[in-house]
Image (cartoon, rainbow, N blue to C red; front, side, top):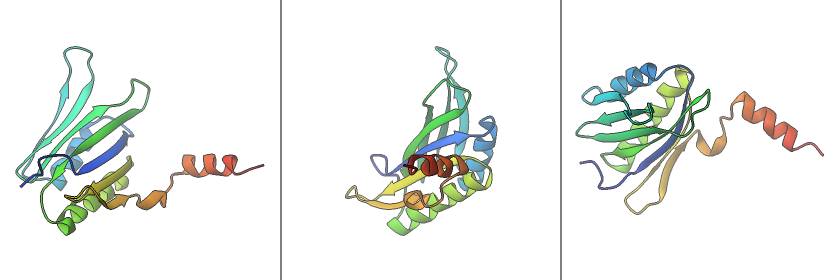
Amino acid sequence: MIPDSNNVYSTLTAPVDLELAVTILKEVFPEAHVGIYTSGYNGAKTIHVDSDDADFEGYPTSDGARSDYLFNGGVAGSDAEVIAKVRQIAERFKDAGFRMSIEAYDTRGEMICDFPENGSEQGEDDQAAAAVDSKP
């Protein structure tokens, strides 16, 4: 059963359009209804995932050239099952060239996993910025 409140929180930057994200999410959640919806108000695109074991919504965070999204929701299952699903989501998006940071919480609100793990997989832009910041 999906938790009553979100237990997975993430940021996602799409390298291209969102159709690839839909394809990935359909692979990760084959039984889910996955779609992109376009706002009639401002044209913003949102991603929705709805199934018996997952419920997510992704909202744009900016109108810039990059497609940055907050992608939050709930995954049903034990802590181990949630961690496995979150790992699968993170790996599939990373393999497809998306930038993603994702974390999951248990029923007590304590973090049970985060990918990339504590920033251990920084991208080239992040590494360059860290190098500049560390210079005297």
